[in-house]
Length: 192
Image (cartoon, rainbow, N blue to C red):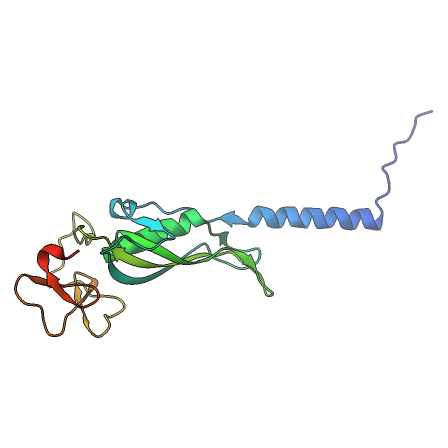
């Protein structure tokens, strides 16, 4: 006589446990990590640090970036590496070569969903003794004949030069003097 094979009965608690595990596994498979963007040569030269810049650095304004996107189980989770790459690129576009990080918001679980963005905020600076580097759009495309504008517009007491807000002294500096970031005229040899 042949022995009959009987599959074990699946109880409700076991079925529920298997269902929950399968659901969580499928949701985890949907969650990705945002790709780290490639850096341009000027962005690779930007220093990103948590401390203040060296003395004589010229402030160029605040910068904020977000890497990753989405809420709960949709979208790609941002990373510090990706946010740092975006921060360096944004700083290089402003002519900065140093960024002091002022705020970090990592992905977190809120009361409404799991926020997948990694956000960095900082202050951009051009270090003393370094030339203003305004990246060109492309070597094959001729440079525009109009001046590069500043976004956002410069505050009162500042003028836009090659896409960077630069302090203006009032009254204007004399010959052989330059206006520092704190809007004080100093001899050109002593200026950053």
